[in-house]
Amino acid sequence: MTLPGDIYTRYLSYENKDQMKKDVCDRLPEKIDIGAVFSASPSKKNALSADAFKPVEKEIVIDIDMTDYNDMRTCCTEAAVCDRCWGFMTTAVKVVDNVLRSTIPTPPSNTCS
Image (cartoon, rainbow, N blue to C red):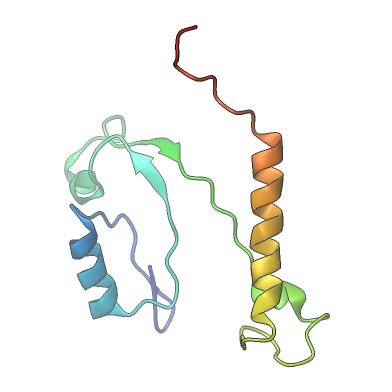
């Protein structure tokens, strides 16, 4: 999480969604980044050796920034977003969704014939 004042908190983990929701509501971060999945809970990071605590997988993260559309928007600039310019974000998400769905092969079904 990036907290106000560019304060970075890393290696956070939660047992459930309610615990995460409470932390987000308490801290009110300006930004949340999704990191790797580690071989052990990040809360145990300092108690483990480097071999015992390492990334094992990572989520795909697609970052669509509103500022990338500044040259096309006529209503807002920078990070400001109104209902009118939100359409750019909606369209970007639809394009990414379409590209991913059309290029990633469908896994074979597990049914027997």
